[in-house]
Picture (tube, rainbow, N blue to C red):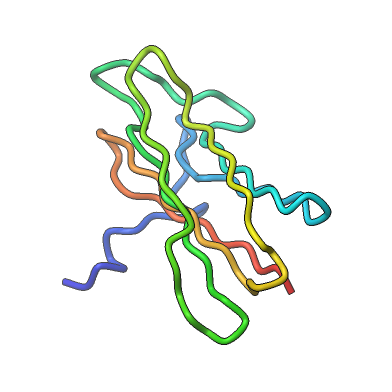
Length: 111
């Protein structure tokens, strides 16, 4: 089995929203990633998003980890912001993990 086989994307979305949505403010260099942008994801001990990770592909092709947000059940929302030198990047990838429905990915091309 390849790692890519466990990743789910927009085509797998159902009633509960799991896809990490990436929004970018290029002027301020802010990357915002949220799960459940249109409809909040459940946030209970039984069903929650415990973390989001963001990776970038630099203009020279190098892949780097930008950051990770961890969330406690019931007290937080799966929503993170990062200050990023966006001119150095050509793409961003966000991963989110649901303890019931697995690992989800989304990409945003910057150029």
